[in-house]
Amino acid sequence: MSSQLERAGFTLLRALSKHADIVMQAYLSGHINDLEYDSNVIEKLIELGVLWRPEPGEDLRLRSTVRALLENSLRDERNRQLDTNIGTKLAAIKTVTNHYKESLHHKAYGDAEVYLEDLAEQVYTLVDSLKSSVRNLWRRIHNEFGYVASISAKIRENELAQSQLTQMRQQLEMFQFDELSKLAGSSRELRRLLVVQLQRSHSEISQELSLAQAKLIDLLGKFREYLHRSQLLKGFVLHQQQKPDYKVKDYSEQAKIPGLFNQAKAIMQPASIDVNNVEHELVYVDLVAHLKQVRHNQSLNQKLRQGQEFSLEDIESIDIESDGLKEAVESYFCQVIDSGQPMSALEYHRQLSLDFDREVWVYGVINGFGGLNQDEQEFFEIGMEGHPHPTFDGNFIIEDVELGLR
Amino acid sequence: MMSLKGRVMETLLSGGFICKTSDELAFQFLQNHEHLAEVERQLNTMNRTLASANDGNLYFCAYQTIDTDERKQLSVQFRDIASSLLPLAEWLVLVQETRGDNAPLTEGKVIRLAELQSVIEDTPAFVEQLAKIARYSLFNSTSSAVDAQLKQIFKRLVETGYLLRPNPDNQIYLATGKIDYLFDVIRFIDESENLGLEQQAELAIKQGDLL
Image (tube, rainbow over the protein chains, first blue to last red):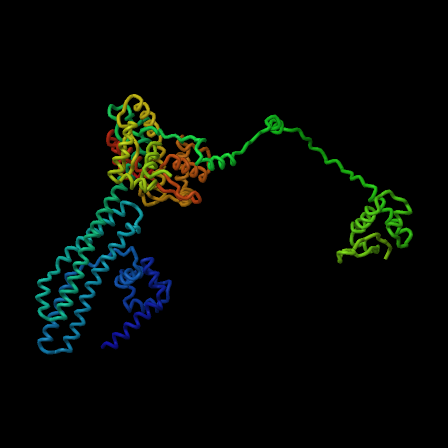
């Protein structure tokens, strides 16, 4: 029997995990369209009691037990079901207790053990369901019914929670401990379960419930205040729109001015600097250092600000005056080309007795060569004549250059 | 360094409001009876007294006895309050509608400018409403862009003490107790002039004439 149950349980759990997407889809959107999924899978889930169809032709929905399982485990705040059916659970507990006592009486210890286990399960389930109801209440209180938007909806949710809470308290009154303790008799196990365990949870939960109730009433007051304010505001704006000539009465003219409008004039002005206070000297020095003296040249500014004339004409072509050195270098290059012979720059300088400084001339020639483009440079060959620097090696002092054709 | 009492006196005498959000220490200071009496004594020497609004959650400085000069001053101030009531009320309605939960702004609530802006920009009716509010002389915005209008409104609200910007690096604002003072004022006007504002609002909502 139990192995069969176990197998069925495995099948169910595996099906849940395998088709988690369908289950979650159904949980989140409330329903699923069976045409979107494999019909075999859907069939199996229906058979396992995960999904059901409320009406022929309707979409499939999750069974409430599966939904409750998810809501509880996911701490979903939309969960507002409270299990308030304590009476039947208590009745079940009493029944199982009687089974247990009877089997003890008949010395059927094996059966008694099973019944005791069952009883423990029943008691813990009851306690757990009470506790989760309280948790559920608190969760809703903590986020101030954040799952509904408007204040009026929050007020309705609050009222629902309050009625559930009242119901829970009424159900809690069904715990009659004198009866339970009489039922438990002298059995240690029964007393532990029925009296100690239940009593402790009972008092814990009652305390929690009264706290929750106070908080709910508090919240309700707050929501009502919000609603009141929001309507006050809207009413004021509406009133002004509907009666544009409405003016607020001048309450300051009344004999007794209402406290709200009695606001004294500001009399504090910033204090002034005491330059004789040595302690403050540092601050002043800093302040003075940050002062910027801005002097505007007003007359110049005026002139600059006025529009200036300009003409839209073609830009005149610009002549760059060629300087003597450049011309001389060019004629030196021409000389080398004409003669076809290599020639030292200084020699050319001497021959034509140019009046440039020798060093400037040599630089000019080097620049002239460097200024040619790659193709032109390939026609010429330039040789540097000079000597290394006597002290700083790696430096080469050029005394003369010789230019020739390749 | 100024003592806490000095700070409280300075805020009160410069026409400021003290609430838990704007200055928690100062507010706690005034919760103490001895401190309260001391501040009161000092204010009394200047014909002033400590007044509170919003069920004791907000303190400000009032005149002890009102004579001609004080009356003149109060009359100027009243005109200020009365003229800024409508723009502020419209702005509060806009904020509460954009938040979606229909909960009015109260002390300590957070407004994120970016969120507000994106909601407003998505809804043409809100854009229109905002433009109308921004044009009031209280806010005095000349821009036609939502972004600039909102920034100007928030800047003015911070200046007038209705909002607080705890961190100048981001656009997150806190409502101060002065917002609640505003509700007190509207409620007072409603009650003393028998306007029945709430009933009007309810009626309008029933008729589907939502703002």
